[in-house]
Amino acid sequence: TSGYSNEYQYIEAQKLTIEDSTIQGIASIYSVETYGSVDETYQETFAGSAITIRNSVITYGDEVNSSYDTGMLCNSRNITIEDSTITGAAAVWNTACIGGIFETLTIRDSEVYIESEYTGSGNWTAPAIGPDRDAYVNYMGKLNITAPSITIADSVVQAVSRHSAAIGLPYLHSSDSTTNLPQLSITIKGSSNITATSVYSPAIGGSSKADKIQDDGLVAAEIVADNPGIISWEPVDGGESPGELSLAAAPASSSLNTFAADSAPDVSLMAASA
Image (cartoon, rainbow, N blue to C red; front, side):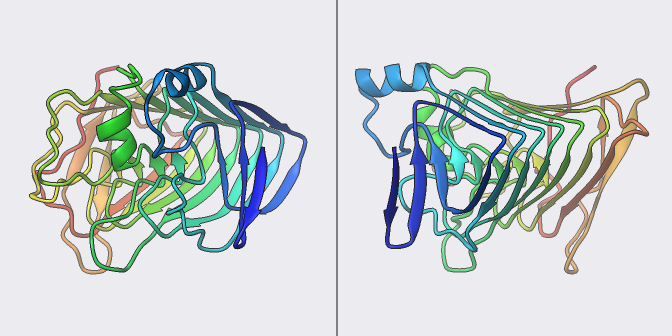
């Protein structure tokens, strides 16, 4: 189904393929709403859901207010973007840009430019790419998602989040228990150019909690290539750099630029071995 209400245009479908298409001014594409009750119908709908964007260009409306129960391209068991361009996506609330509730999220041979920004009070912004807080804390467990994954291959990605990781986990509340949360895996491979920027969390990987407790064990990152390397987090806007992070590899064919402004040094991304 699709709808239009108060300049909010959306596409909702359990199984959706957008191929060889150009879509402009869209606000949201999803399979299930974030704030639905997780009953048997919801579980069955999600279990059979998939969104595929192939050989298409999707341009979102300026500064989409994603407080309409869902994010921008999200809430489907398997989300795949390939040979496509996603641009103009700038959410200004607390639900995900790309991700939300998902089991696999794959970006391949594509260009993605996405931003999660909110300058009001409260720690609202979600990751640009990844699960938002409500999806991660309250929904993934109920939907038996134990190993959500993000894979970026041979793509150009520019991702920005104010509070959460730009690519990775959401900004968690100090009251959130991390005991039973699933581990998110992030894999970047091939000839990719990734620029990730966060103000209050690591740009890629784990996020800050409100009390600055690191998310030990909740995220694993891997750069797939032949030679090990180091990614340097650089300060922006006068912030302090959290330092260097050794990953599995940093290939010459891939370029990663990661920035964090105010992240506490003890908030770390957990690296996985190759």
